[in-house]
Image (cartoon, rainbow, N blue to C red; front, side, top):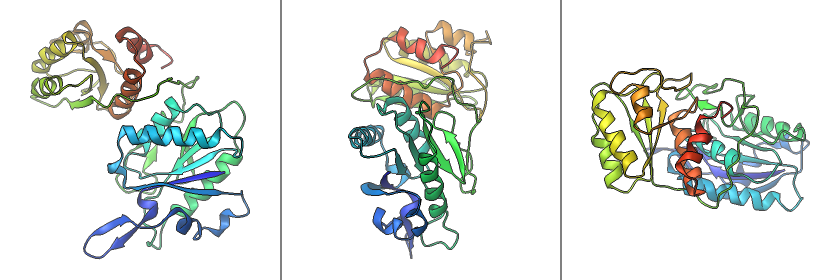
Length: 308
């Protein structure tokens, strides 16, 4: 098994006066988990040593290409990737979209630092290795292992700031894994939040500063305050792709309401609805689709088809 270490809380220790910071290499982490030795032969690699918030979509894409290149040679049966939990769900979803390999890739991390007596890193690593060794041919989804629970990358979210079981999912993966063939991601995609009394200024700022796409974290089923609607119309008119997600934790977006700023008026303005993808993942998907050079209609189809 290839084990790629990238940083995160699993590698951190408390520095007096500074708090938790990345400290341990992959080898130093593995040396603290002797229970792994009987489970598999592990090749350890340090890809990076980043806290979760330091990741960019470009670096996530570089990780995907690194994993692909290492798994292409036939030496490994799969990979475990450690990652900071704050952006783990976004990296996992991007890998699920763009990885070429059909081998299992499991992402994991920790909620406690390596010098905490309750460090959960070892248990997550052991469970991840077991998940790779139990992989069944034909199920090539990227998954996330946290607190002894395996989640599909598309479904998983960090839903609590520091609980042991911070990561949750619906438990229902899409029937077919979606893959996007691309050699890059388009970084110029902004996320704009809707809130009571919001207007179009942040939408207009995104367009003025060169955005190629905008994801709206809208209310309910995909609705915004009326003053935001003009900004959506202006963005679409300039060729910027606007995708409507919801700030709600569960459910799908859909054009249901016909009042000014309601989903029907957003659809009429040319916006695309994200289905059940939350805004951060809708942004990742839009980055990959724009990077692949997809047309607006192809992007609409990828987001709005029933099985997406």
